[in-house]
Image (cartoon, rainbow over all chains, first blue to last red; front, side):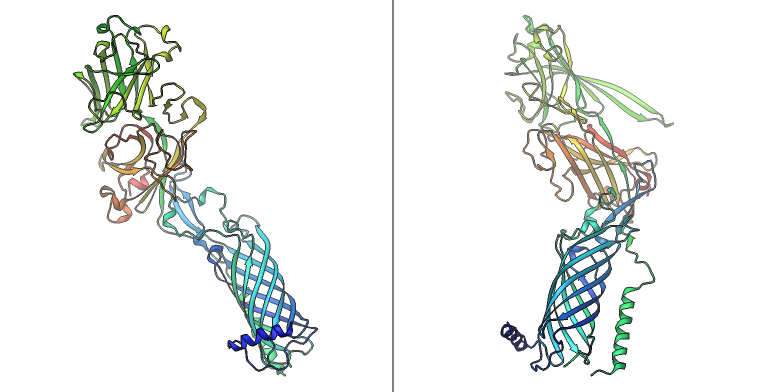
Amino acid sequence: MNRAIRGAALTLAAMGFVPMAEAAGQLVPKQFSVTSRVGGVIAERAASLEPSGVIGVDAEYAFSRYFGVGTSLDVIRGNTTSQDFPVRLRFGLASSNGGDTLVNVELGQTVNTINIGAFGTLRYPGTRVSPFLLGGIGTYALLTDPQISRGRRSTQEVSYTGGVGVFVRLGQRVGVQLDARSLTYTNFDRDALNPAVGRAEQNTPFPEDFQRPPAAKRTVLNTQYTLGFRYIPGGVGGN
Amino acid sequence: MMNPMRIFVLAAVTGALLVTAACEDNRAITTEPVGDLGFGINLAREATNLPRGSIRFPATVQNVNPALDSLVVSLSGLDSLPAGTSYMVWVANDSSTTWFRARGARLQIFQSDTSINAVGDPVILNSNSLVTGVDRFSNGGSNRLQRFATSRAAITGLGIGQVGVGMVSIETTADPAQPSANRQIIWGRRSRRNGNIANVPANDSTFVRFGSFGRSEASEYVYSTTSIGRASVLQILPRGRVEVRGSILVINDSNYTRPPAGYYYAAYAVKFDTINGRAADTAYLGRRTTPFPEQISLFNADFGSENPAPGIVLVPQNVILGMRTRVSADTIAIARATPPRRAWAEFGRVTVTLESKDGIEGRMGSAIIMQQILPQSIRGR
């Protein structure tokens, strides 16, 4: 296995992704590390979610210099793409079957998403810089705004994570980490983001005059970029 | 090894970033009005001026003296037809095996016109005209009643044959041998009185039916705006709404019965006179289509035609589930306005009409199925 990993690492190195110099690993087997992260998330267009911020924390246990497992917690707070949820409101002459004056409204709302997962890492330990791959499975909970949605609504389904990153050692116990992750939501229900779902108000008579979102998808991809501060308790941050 | 102070500073910066990302003073406002205001109103079902009338059959079913036996067809709600196209009257026996064309008729036209006098009161003027030797006719209108009267002797080839059915068709040739199969629009059966043609009394009359004729009652299609012929358990109540937003006028409506063979649904907007509110001009809004987004033309959704939109036109039930019209004032000269926000100003009425395919497209017929007076927010802006 080690030979295979080393081969892959050498290939990456040949492509210029990692420094050639290999020295003592930055993860010592049988040790924990904690990484607090902050960054942003960009959802694919079909999700009708605006780019938003994310904060997260990873707790990782290293089996060896190359492998680790851990858990992650990400909290995303963002808005829905309001243009994707046009509704009409009727005002004016009430006797005119609900009002003769129409106001067209793009109905967005704030959405909180919590993603909890377990992951594994594969690292190529360098002297100062260690690139890594990660993959995992978890669950996401999507919580809509209770005021706009007229009550608490939430969705909880399975999520998958995969990504690449690089850890830069700053000291024996600390370092920074940059990573890019794909966060995949399964059984995603875009209608759950529409506060007016099932109501007649969303049936706009002028659909051509409003931006139409792409077809809804059940599986949506989110791309997440984070900058993390990694802390290794017990003085095992380097060497 | 990293300096503890550096560790502290790094941790503090990261923590500050986390707090900044997580906390906001203000609630996100994501809901906003967009674009122009819209104004609209629901359509109301009218079903006025559909073709209707009666047929008085010859005195006896089989008469030994044809010259004394008359056939009288009284009709109203017909639309005018263009040159080369005309209404023709036919008779046949109760089984409709052979049609004989009625000719040489006395055509009397009764017309009612309403005008407004100097003090603003309506004045109704009635007039009538008589033409003899008529084989066919093409004039019509919402204010006209035609009385087509002929004798058994003038019906070529009938002789003393049985007259069980009278029928009106639309023909595009001057002297057809038989009525066009898909333009047999009005008919009356003598046997409908009691089911047995031998028992009907002399000078028997019956109200006509409008739709698509069939040799048996089971195969005919009787047009109604509210129910499917002979299937009265299925009630159809057309409903819909007309809305104007900027220069766009949209009609979204649903639940129509299928037009008879040779007919289609169209939409019109009527512009009012600024001073006295009378109808001043009419804008043709076009043939109706299926709803957004397909918007397939429903011109050929009539009975007997190949179904253009199987998801919207239900052939077994003869129902059109939904229709739509979307028109920009930019495409209609009398609807354009400066500034553009005044588009459709002074338009006071929108109608959905049943039109003959053989009629003059773009000229509003008399059979109004749905209509509504537009709110002041549209016509007065």
